Length: 97
Image (tube, rainbow, N blue to C red):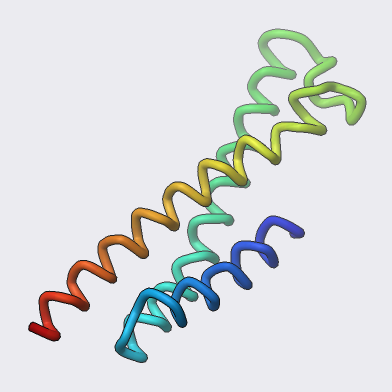
């Protein structure tokens, strides 16, 4: 939840700084929600499979992968969002020329 809020604020800021048209800003901000939902879903599925097939300790909240894996996911989400911003900005510049 905290990562989603942080990415949302960053998307508003990045849209304001790097994108000119309003509809592209809306696309940038709304792209955060599918990115975080899909990323968290993948994290849950991976932890569940690891707990079921490797060791049940993976699902315990004291496990390092369970408690600190969100930072890795946040980094991946941030890189994906950076790619979306780069695409929207590049297309925005082409339209302006």
